[in-house]
Length: 223
Image (cartoon, rainbow, N blue to C red; front, side, top):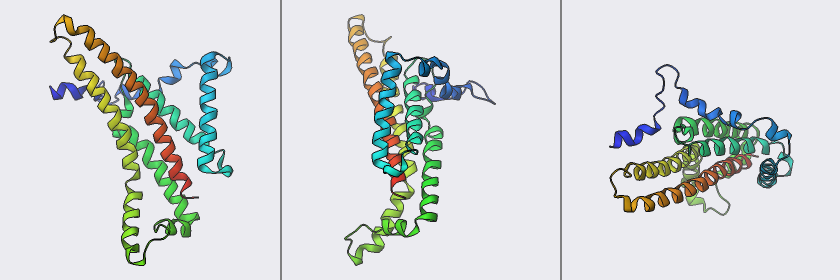
């Protein structure tokens, strides 16, 4: 049972080149160029969302880093598209794998750390000891802050992957019980699946937003 349950996350369409990972780029097919060129109700709504995100990331990064907001907006858009595509039947959810989420989190964290330690070394050293820390606790605070900085890419990756896996597993478990429950409870099962789908849609938006916001906060700490 558990093997069949988790096999829905296996990218095993091909031995040499698994085609499942191409679902990461499916949004380029689903969203034509006319979506960005011809003003429609949906494109106007998406542009308002992007403008709102730009203003928020600009506030987090500071007024002098307005161009850097596009990196995090693109990150938010990529994760959001992949989270939503995973809710469709027979489409591989790439963001439920650490291979995908860690690939996004680790290079960002490494670039922030390298930039900070090279260009703002004193600021990075001062950040290891919070203001007002007693001298006796300073060595322990340095160890704690160093560990918390090291595990940041892991927490980013695991948070996104775990949230996407949890919802998909719950929907799969309820779907597998459809053939065993009586017809009188079928409507209740269908209603529960619809509620779970709505919840997963909200989780897809929230997790992509959290990933992008935390990444921008990590970036603002090194400047």
